[in-house]
Amino acid sequence: MGMEPLVMGGCAVLRARAGPPPDEVGLRDRAGRRKDSRLRRSGTMYGADCLSALQTIHPSASNEHERSHDEKSRYHLRAAFKERERKGLMDRPIIQGEESWMNQFSLNPVLLKDILDHAKPMGHHQKVRNLNLGFGFIYYGVVRALRPKHTLVIGSGYGFSVICLALALKDNGVGSLSFVDPSYSLLKDGPAKTVGGRNTWKDPDDVSRHFGRFGVDRVVTHFKMASNEFFTGYKGLGLPKVDVAFIDGNHSFENVRDDFVNVVKQSRKNTYVFLHDTNIYVREMLRHAGVKKWLKVLRQDDQAFEMVDFPFSSGVALVRIVEPKVWKQFP
Image (tube, rainbow, N blue to C red; front, side, top):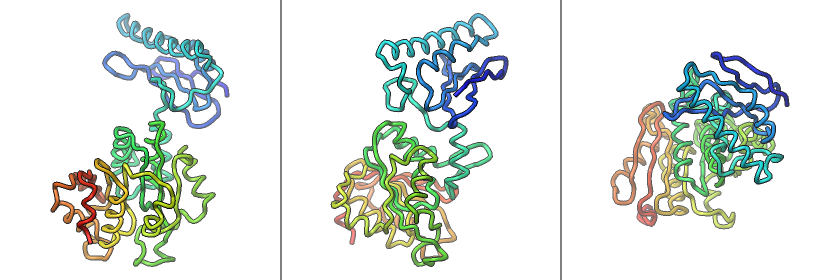
């Protein structure tokens, strides 16, 4: 893969001629502001190549004070590569998981656009025009902060919630995600089983390619089955306790209740559960309107649950399980 100089704002930027969408490592001043000088590296660029490319970047500061900040940034970057060289890592790719400020951060503009185009979020308060994932940033941020070992997602039309959560696990360098969806479709299976199902997950190879597009195919395991079937065989699957869950399956009150209670049974204190579609008033007149009703039940026991509801777009609530044994009180 070659590199070619690109002049932007009076400074030199390196652009890959070929290869996967590049990650971007920004140089920042003491106040945390991004400098115009940048080093772009793809996920397969090696340490020696990075150092060679770095040497072609020239200061773009307009005065001595800013230039000194640029020089310090480049000094620290060179120091990082020299440390890799000392440890014998220069011929190995810079991979996610290394304890360095060079760790990959997935949410670059290229990937944000890819998520919005191909994971097709619906009702997550997103804005395609300015690459805003809406609630997706909350999903990602919660997992980055909590560092869960096991995340569970029940239901997704095109995988938006799965991808946002899985990218955070990938960037954390630890954790796995179980994705449960029987791949129902409204036309094939009818409204009694699904309203938002798109039959996206019927073929295992297509599922793997879809998640591979975002680099999370090794993080996500898809279980093509209904959630009640999944929970019946949960222990047999050898899965750990749930640390973070996202419930977006069948929206009837009975199914929302059963999914939540089954999640709690496999959870622990301080497990967090997302409930999507808390703000769809049209569904209040339909069978698939159980999320808002279920939240009213949970609010009655503030000793067992803490929650915050985001009533924007289709709405999403985040529930913290304070007392995991509370499931015994539900029918």
